[in-house]
Image (cartoon, rainbow, N blue to C red; front, side):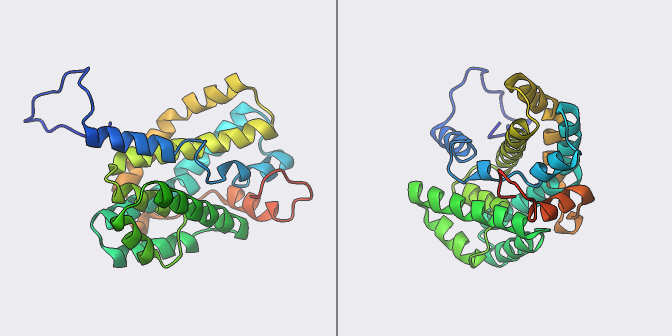
Length: 246
């Protein structure tokens, strides 16, 4: 849902049409986080390629376990927290806070390839969103980041500048990230289309739970325990044959 109703308001009919603002917010969010939006996410595996070669991921259950860990205790949760804080700072036009979040997001990348992945996608996301949906508030938020635009920060500030609610943005972002991870895994393991969709379904409660945690987390809560995934990202840099850039 893109809006909430207070307990004192009358419940809207189940088939009530979205307002123009709600429809625009949903339309833009679906567009920005669609696999067709050209941020180059398909070029990155977040270390999954090395994990497959090393034998850590060999089938759908082991891929599910790997992604659950990344969501709950690794990049998924950390990126969600950074997105939430970037969105709030941009919505409040607190450019000092936004700049600090942007800098922190780049510093948190645990490997060279992970840094390339998040900053390249962040730049592409901002450039394309700004070209298609211009906003003066967006220009000011981008300037506050001083060129440091990791992907979750980019999604957060663009969504805030266009009035897309944080909770919806956060869950859409996590769904897009998980879908890309599963897409990479399906090509590397490999997995069929049905198995891939079952994985997306199985990870639904993990995505929802991670989003809920991120909404109430402070920047002091940032941190991960997915050491094997971090090592996978580092070792991928020296992997002999590669399909992906990370």
